[in-house]
Image 1 (tube, helix red, strand yellow):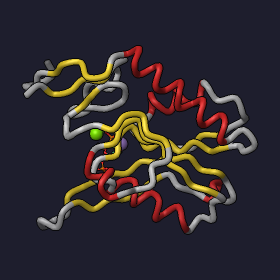
Image 2 (tube, rainbow, N blue to C red; image 1 turned 120 degrees about the vertical axis):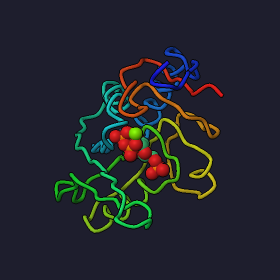
Image 3 (tube, rainbow, N blue to C red; image 1 turned 180 degrees about the horizontal axis):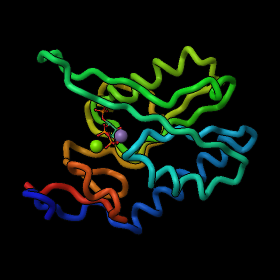
Length: 174
Ligand code: PRP
Ligand code: MN
Ligand code: MG
């Protein structure tokens, strides 16, 4: 129980580990001749990114981005600023790492901004993907689990900043 929400286990630690290992095998195969730059989106993807990178067999780099969202003065929805992108990504094979893609807005913003940097290639890996992103057909090359509209936390994912330290993923009871 965190704050006023009750959670139950959704994806256990061993299932998570197994899936992460399978994904890293794919990446090791696809990038055997390339030296990728992992681009985790803070904060949520820090644990996933770390576990992925530990299994990489090729030389690779890491660089971080963060999307800070703040509400506008009116009910104009959310404005998002991206920080951390720089010219070091020029001519690189970039692998954006997300913990979850939900509406896809965060990812779309990052992909749009990357275009102007002259990257060699851009692919996305996300541990979780929710339905809206699935329906939009956003190009997520590697996906851990496709999930329904659950509120999830753990393994990097938070509820009001809490729960990121968990080794498994929980979902809100309803
Ligand atoms: C979450 C998550 C993704 C994004 C997905 O991050 O980690 O980055 O939202 O949502 P979307 O597809 O609807 O854009 P959040 O902005 O909560 O920040 P955090 O990673 O620091 O928790
Ligand atoms: Mn995030
Ligand atoms: Mg969050």
